[in-house]
Image 1 (tube, rainbow, N blue to C red):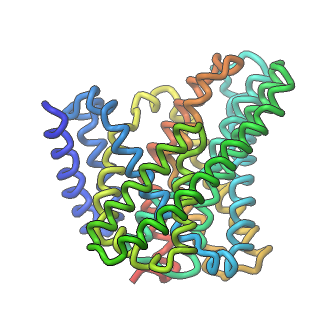
Image 2: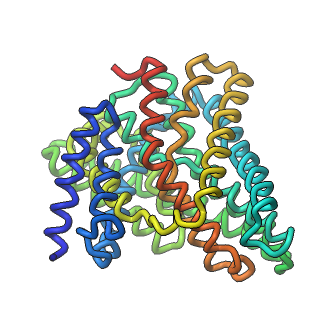
Length: 403
């Protein structure tokens, strides 16, 4: 089968199962993900393994659109109004998830212990798994809130925390790897180099996003009298240029496109028109493409032999998210709805956390257990991507923010 036929089958299956999920009062993206799973080479075998490798550009451009839209939720007015709450919740829920997973996995590995030979290896494995528990998948969160037109304190808090969560996750992961290298006997100078590389990666990404955000504002105003189709072309081209430039320079491309969206929503005089056009004409296509392909990329072989560890990882992460969010909400005197329901929207996880986990394979000092850690993270991502949107919908519904 040729690539165009397989793309057509994948997208129409996603639309059909998305509609079926909606009939069953589930988020559409649950249907999209299931469509990818149904057509998976390891399930029905309809889609060929070679096709999956060819879809990376589609996933990247869809993810760039999603992170641009997430940046568009970070208006300065909203940050001034809820910034203290959002930043405090982000700090506590990510650190609590880190600590809960670290402790639970350390105890579990110590009891079962089939993959580690020394106490230091157990500690490092648990620390790395803890750092990978922190990030949230903002794409799933955005898809659910937009599908149900959710508006209110809880949806704003969820989107704000999910946006900052990735930065926090990258920071915790980098710090953990630096400490782990020293702890396992690597060169201590590596920690300073890691801090420097992290600063360059994040700072460079933000600067790239800011530059392309202002370029977009200037160029789009020149064509402001053109059709909405012309504006979509400008949006697509500038997002692609921002993403590609960040990749070329070695910066974090997702932070770059998110920063670009933040500049547009705060400094573009027609920002409402820009994001309403994206929501009307591109969001549905982007979400179908991204989540069906995400389902197709899930590796089910990761579930074999690691189910117990995956279950402990998922439960410990959820407990950390809920307890950290609850404590931070009380400290900042957030509304009762924010305290009760925000954590439910932080359950989805995938994308960036899988990318971070795969980087372990390049760390020589962690070669002995990197495959074990990767299998747990990918296995947990399957669970998080399937039931995360359902938890998000339930939270928004209970908060009264879904009509």
